[in-house]
Length: 245
Image (cartoon, rainbow, N blue to C red; front, side):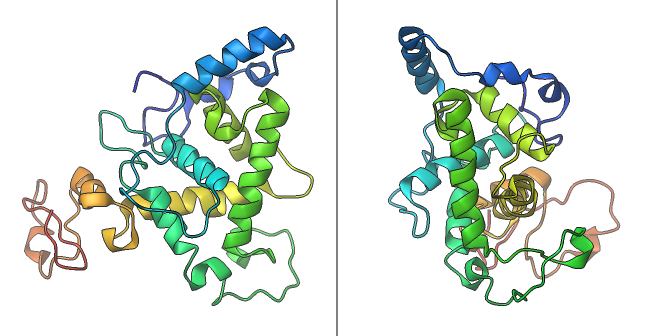
C-alpha cells in the first residue's frame, strides 16, 4: 500500500497518527472545490468488500453497514509487506456470519442489568446486543463523518479514516447517545482480530493465510515434539475440517 500511517499491523494506528490534525476533517465550503475533492477521494478510496468471497451477500448488514465494516476492517489490519489484510482474509464475512448466530443476539449473556460504568473486569455493561452495537455504531460513525466531511466513513480518504478511528480509540470523538469507544474496543477490534486469526470455517482467515504468516500449526493432532525445538514449525497449518494449507 502506498500510504504510510497504518502499514504496520503490529502497532495499530501508532506513531504519526496521533499527530494528524483534526482540521484535516473539516468540510470544504467551496461547492465546486468540494465536488472535485469528492471525486478525487472516491477514486482513491477502497472498494469495500472487493476481497469478500465471490457471491457472498451479507445476511445481517445493510449495504451501508457492509461498506462501513469493510472499510473499517481494511484500516484495522491493512495489507502490508508482512502479510495480507483483513479484507483479503474475509474478516467482514466472519463478522456478518457471527452476528447471525446466538452471539449476535447475546443469547447466552446476562442482559438484565443494572448496568454501570466499570472496567471490563466486571463484565459487559450494556443492554445492547452485538447486533445493536454494530447497527448503531456504524450509523453513529457515519453520521459523525458526514458532519465533518460530508462523506460516509467508507468514502473518506485513507488518512481521514485512520484519523477517525484513532480519535475514537482515544476517546476524543464521541457521540452523546452512543459509546463509540466501547463499540470500537469491545466489538470492532475484537471481532476483527477473531476473524483474522480464527479457524476458516467461521468465514475469516481465508486459506489459513494468517496462520501461515505467524507459522501457527492450527489443529494438527500432534506437534508436541516441536514445542521444545528452536526454529519455526516446519509444516503448514491444518484447520478444523482437516484441510491442509
